[in-house]
Structure formats: C-alpha cells, structure tokens
Image (cartoon, rainbow, N blue to C red; front, side, top):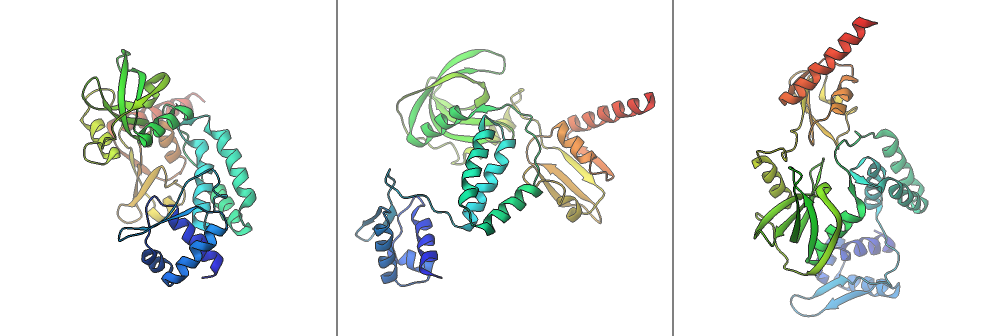
Length: 322
C-alpha cells in the first residue's frame, strides 16, 4: 500500500465516531505503531485536526471543525454516495430531486475517470419504482434528525388518523423509514409513554425547545420498535403488507429485471421464483411484474389478489370492446 493510499485509509478510520489506539490502527493498516505516529503527523501537517489522548484508554480521533480540509472518500465510499444521490429522485422526500442532481454533478466532477464510468454504468442499468406513499419535507426531516442527535425536545401539531389535531411535547429518539413512510420515534411527555408519529402527519412548523433527556427506544432498535407498533395496530395506521408473486422463470433471469432495492427474488423450485416487495405492495408493482411477460401467480396478500383480478377484468373488458 502506497503512503497516500495508507493516509486515505487512516483518515477514513479516524472519521468514525470513536477513539483508535495506535496499536489498533497499526493492526488495521498492517504497519508499525511508529509508522502510524508518522502518518498522524503528516495528516496534521495537511491541516487535519487529529486529537490524541494519553493513558490506558487513550487514542486518536479526528475533531470536527470549520477548518477541516475537504472531505476525502475512498473508491467504495464515492460510489456509494453517487448511487445514493442517483436514487434520491425516486425517494419519498419532497424537493430532494433537484438537490440530489446538483450534488451528484459536483461529485462526478471530482471523481477519477474509472469511478465515473462505474457510477454511470450503475445509473444507466438501474431503474426504480416510483414512490406512491406520502412525501415529506426535507427541512422537517433534517430538523427531526438533528433533535434526535442533540437530545433536544420538540413541539409540534399532529393530526391523528381520525383527523383529530393535538399538540405534542416530545423527546425524540430516532427517525425510521419503513420503505414506504417515515416515522418519528419519541417519548411523549404529556402521555408519559413512547409514541410513533407518522412524519407526514406532523403539520406546520416543528419547534425546537429546551434540551431534554437522551432516551433509548424500548428494545434498543428503533426500526424493530416501529415494525412492532405497526404489526400490533388494529387500525388503519397499519401499513399495507408486502406483496408476493410467483414467476415461472428462474431467479437468476428475473433478478436481472427486478430492482433489488424494492423487491427480493428467491428461488421457488425448478425454473420458478418468488418476487416479494421490500415494502408494502402497490399497483405499480403489479403492472411492473405483468410487463415481465412471464407466467405468474399472485400469492398475496388478499388485497393484491383483488387488485390483480380487477386489473385483469378491466383489461379483458377493454380488449372485448375493441
């Protein structure tokens, strides 16, 4: 590994939110502790504020600050960021499409030619289902996420499923995306209990209040908590279930035509596979699968079966009238 490549890898390690001992860094980079100390000095000479603490639990970390030099990304990180920006236009955050395009244009200007080709190939070969679910404001999402990070309380107006409006005082813990909707997991101070709020039902301005307690969601996993809340709900708050369709073609053949971000493809016997949405099913998923032009069986849920029957009926009636 060249010195420049090693410095880039060292910088990537130091950017993670933890302290690294010299021995740990030396093991990761397969060099001596002395080389690590010399590399730390090189980074400091380049303007990176690497902080060192002494003692048995001491180590190195990269301090944040306005004077931090431009961010450096290794190959895998650059491709991951570029692909994320390319798929941002199909997401559920309102107004992010143009921002994603601008950011991607800036990133591609500084990518090496070999990475530009990889990113371009991924973009040209990848398609995505359009999002039918509710879209949320990007600024609101950033405010909620910042409050979760900083441990500050939030006040907002919330509209329940029965259209009743209430004022909420919360200590936010996490923001969760189900693949269809965005949720805020927070401790409701007035109800003295945890609540899951659909972010598209938060109306008006979110007011950041005083500093509160940093709380850990029950079970420690915000996504699992939201999933459990949705499954245990007997109301309309419960999201639509994933849809499954059995296709009479090989998994290898079908997986090339179905975006893995939105559906999984699993073998189901000889020359058959099952395609299952990663989020709730939609009519666009049904149409997309029909366009594969392969024999298929709709497995469920019942609502998807009903939608498939209704679509088939309309198409049959249309062909009869022509």
